[in-house]
Image (cartoon, rainbow, N blue to C red):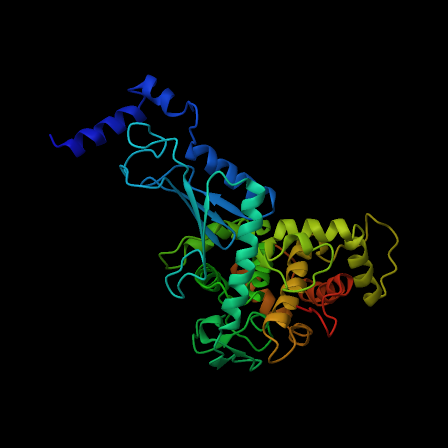
Length: 398
């Protein structure tokens, strides 16, 4: 029997409870000991508390803890050589008094564009300082990546310049490449939102300069999706796995505009989860939902006074998506000043027939009649932008 084989059998025996004393010693810190399991838990807790979407495998693989923090990939390792099959908190294989290292990388999968950001910090750094340092470096990396973009093609519908990789097909025809503000236009026939979902995830995971507006498309589809969305996404022929935000829209990562932000958004720069964004906006504007409904009713000259009988116009279901569209439109206006204003494109960017087709594909149970999603979004997005002062001509000043 080889020594490696013996090690593997020993690890398996411990996992089955074969060495209780050693397992207890593994998780009992002594003087000067830094346990990576504690560091990883504190890391995830710190970024979750700051409003970032977070994921973690919950166990180390090959001596490394991995985390997914919004658009950032985190790695936690002990310096030096160790047994990669051993737990990084195993005192028989590692010196537990050495301080582990945390590495933060964006994009999360840097295969296509390379690493736009690599930050290494000691694992003894406090959670608040980690969040602050990564946020600052992420903002710089995003700005640098956007500044290096080569606009080598145009959106097939609006004609705005983009890098080809940043335009996606909303239908089965990959020759019709669209920007995020044109995918729900009335000129688009044969929409395939399920395949588009995977394309958005791939682009967002691999490019630090991804157009901010794709988060709004994700938010709208996720907010409108029916209960069987997972089954529908898994029926698509692809090796990819749908990401958690499709089943929890609050986990969508939203890039905020650079420069001077409204007070409600300043603590969230350079980006945040949709759930945190919605919470911040509603805290600053606690009457937002009522104003949203009132604006819709005014347009329709609806004089219904009975609160229980008053129509909701899908405000509850679509408010997060409307906020996401308003904010990401401002982000794109700041980061990509060439071409049409996003506000101009969104003024007629939601068409009932296109949305109805898309919603049917994702199993939505929302009513898509003429006073459904298209009407609600066309009114709600500019209202929210107005309240947040996002679409003023000079916004934002860097």
